[in-house]
Image (cartoon, rainbow, N blue to C red):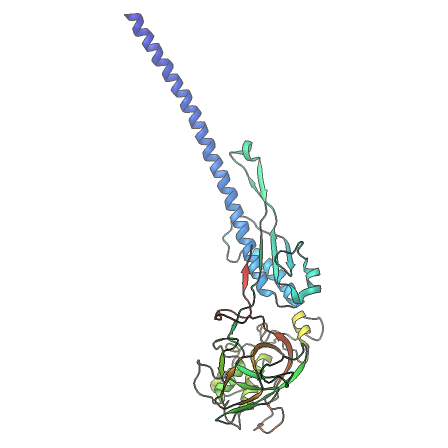
Length: 400
């Protein structure tokens, strides 16, 4: 009897020993699994931070693309700044950029360096940002993952396809037709054509616009068509959204004695010239000057920032880029009894110099309130659908 009890006690001791061994093995496996999860989590955290940095840099760079070599330089600068300043990122990983490359088409291979992209700057639409490889030390699962894990991330952003409408455009309709023999279709001038757009007053009941004239538009943000309203509209008062084919309403634009001068005063805020009066509404905080106020330069010099005398920074501050690029609706020359007509196309016009505004009543002075411009081309828009009011010509989009 005693021997049987001793045998049972021996069996129980053996079972206890087996359970302890199995528990130790499972604990070790659990520890290894937890360690593996921790290491994998750290890898994914680093990967997410690298990807966020690449995305932010690519989107920021894409916003700078403007068809000029200056836009390529700005894209590189701004992408680098985003990474250096951790703007919009809460990264614990030190992130730096390996390459910033450019392309005409999304799937081009290879993408171009900044220097090569400048040779075709007018067609560049995409930016690829690749981060430097970052290593993550493996703490627990080095046997499975190695001592370190290294990877980089990349993102491609670019300007979206053309939007069908424009918001906050230059609130003036420009009458122009390069081929007056086709009275129902407005043919644009050749790119680079120099124009002197003359102010048109309207008559109070109708507007008759000759080729090369412009007329201030009626916008819902303001009431009336007095001197202040005309000056603010010409200065670039934010307005509304329109798309191709929409009707636009014109305004008599102040009165015959003051309209051209008011328009010129508003226009000249882009050159850091602020006329008195107008209820003190023409101020830099509302209508900033352009970042380059050098007159009589070409649109190419302006966009490419050709070194030398073609650059004259605003002396009172940084100014605002592209204030001299006027995106305006183009209409057919003709008579409009109801002050309304349809938008033929969106034109981009570069303001080459200040608008002439001689002292006193200059309404009968040739050229008073005229706009010296260079035709840059049609704005990148399509023909159907509703405009997106938060957008300009195109918007930066993260593609991959």
